[in-house]
Image 1 (cartoon, rainbow, N blue to C red):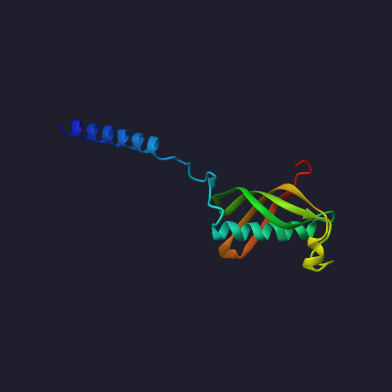
Image 2 (image 1 turned 45 degrees about the vertical axis):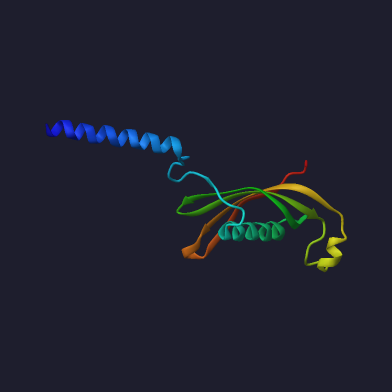
Length: 136
């Protein structure tokens, strides 16, 4: 009789978990999750990515992020952010011109992609990938 109850409990738990999985979008542990564009940590990762992109890029500089297309994060030994944005890109850097003069320069729309790795408890950030597509 005890075996019967154990089987009933196992079957009931299996059916409940299957029903829950069908009603709720399940993401495996360590998988990517879309996050709201207003998420403060996602916004901080985007700011960091654009600053780092502008530091290392010699040809064009992101002057403004006009639209967040996709913002995702993944929990690893820290946090990984995958960011896709539409940005205005100019040949003038903020260091060379005042903001007003820079706004008068010709800007083009580009789709930019960034991967940022953050380990908050070590105060560590790294832009692992950052580029803007030429065809928009």
